[in-house]
Image (cartoon, rainbow, N blue to C red):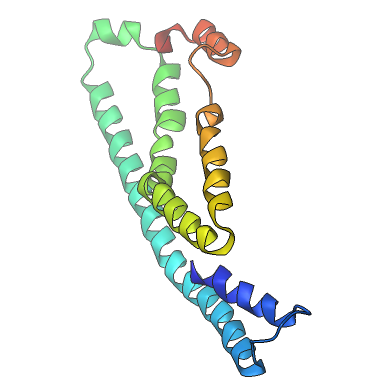
Length: 164
């Protein structure tokens, strides 16, 4: 959250109406921008490595569970289950855990960042910031990936009846 503030002050130094930012302060703001980027790089890489590793562990555990379950199926259950269903579970469905582990933190991080960004915008532009954020938040329900009654969802249910 501090990098945009440093960048804003640095840009303000170069504006024609600059009266209160000295050259030393501009160097400080430039250093702040560089340090924020550096800290971000060194913090995000180990985090993403750990998250990908955790997602892979979950995926491997689920594949192992599916494999062990498929070995214990009765002959009746084997007759009802096709090899394509098992392959689909192992290739497509289990890989969603990788994606889920990466994005699960945005469930709490998104609202927190929205509040912090709204606060900083409130300090700069006032009530217009809250109105703008409210307008953006009103569009969240429209951003749904695929509503249950969309044409794509209906076609998927027709093709694969076990998911309908």
